Image (cartoon, rainbow, N blue to C red; front, side):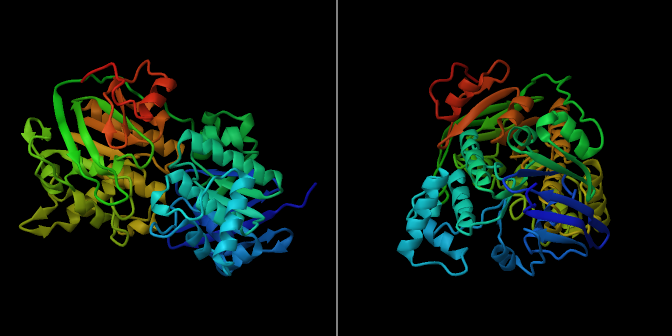
Length: 505
């Protein structure tokens, strides 16, 4: 049997009040795509940070190709043969592909030679990229190719991928897996983190499952169903989504002829968008990243105002109202960017709760913050949405991405909005937590609210929405009943079939 590329034995890491990893042991073989599965807060991020030199373990040992692996920092990890593609891209929009690649290299070659090497790797691995293109002009999938090529130029022995398909189209995901298989065939070991269990089953050779920082399983994912894998992760059977008890009622939110210019040179203009959301229904909006999702949420939340008469809630014109006025009226929103847009990184969870809930939860009295009430509301969000954190005084940046996402969604849901608009509600959230978040949105609709879910996850939209429409280049297709929609029809809508819809509002 080949010597493992990577071996961990008894790894442990503690933070104040939290045992992030406890006696973690596993191996990754040459040419193996090895999945790392677990709920949010299970210890996956801490584990890969130790491998990549961002965190030092308290206990245990690591080996890379039979030698002790004790990287003092990421530079040392890269020098040893470990590369990592992070969930959040670290690229400069104003620089070219080649310039961004050069920034990630210790001693980059001359510009022309680097461009030739990028072009060669692009051809070898089927990752088409033009070295001279500005990153600002690239799609999410193309940006990921830049990150991957930057890693491949290091000739890594171990490549760590963190949620690599979270912002990719199905076609881009297929291209990624084709690339990973080529890389594995050359002997590179790949450690793969994803919450998409069907993806794991279809493409990974082995899976190590973490729960509360400990290894609870080591399996061939191809031999188990997604539900079985999820049950191993959470230690219990996955609950089924309950869609019963809902019926569309009166019109709540109406958008008519909404057009806005692109906010930046790289942004997307909104073009004559119209939609209606009714009480008790979930309207799903699908689309590939960069087609106006963020701009639409900004227009609905009040971050950007529009012409009078374009946005009304319960018949009241909110087009010129800002975010606070819209929240007071009952139109709430949760943006995609949870750390920086939805939450202030260095603020505590209590302070982040105050930011959006001050008026609706009566957290202000005589102009002063009621700290007790604010803390109680934050604690309620933490409890009801199972946010894994030491407490409401914890800074937002200290939470794992999935736990912060649960806090952000819970903070809005528990304010009992008339209409809630969410963008990517379960991005980076594990299967169990995703089910809980989706159920909370359905329960909100069951209570009479209207819900708009903007998502790139078609499975999520099909599971949640009563009607579906697609956003393409800033245009919104006519909504159609989700029931009976085929993938071919959805693909046409996502591709820009603005005038092809058969249904009308």
